[in-house]
Image 1 (cartoon, helix red, strand yellow):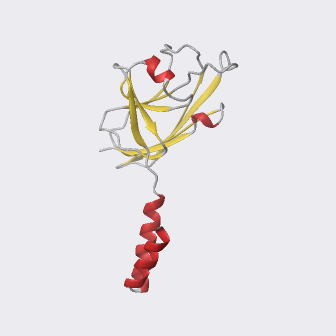
Image 2 (cartoon, rainbow, N blue to C red):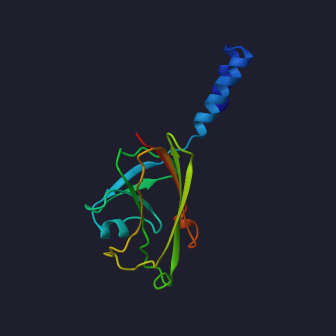
Length: 171
């Protein structure tokens, strides 16, 4: 389908302009966006109705509301003074309990008036088989007064379940 669109573009436009339009079509088709998905209002729902390693945006830590992030890429988030993210570390699979894992986040912040900064976060967690567990793997970003964009790479020594890459603009 994209090939047909490119052929049509090249038939009607001068060569230089056709090349620019073709590059724009190709570039826009490969852009990836993460989206906010289903909301969970308690720990049990969040743990049991999503996969081990699922990533959530927690829009209000006091309310324990978790909004699943579907996919990797650019994300649209509401304007806030801090941003918190949670990883689901619930599993009933044998061998998960009592094994210490390390979850990581590398955060890059683009500032309006200062150089770009990168911060690393790591913390040990033990996966849980308790579906009501409130000991969540959370990571909050504060100190964003001068920040215009944030990118986060999540990972773990537990394999690919916890690999997530998101970014978002601050308004």
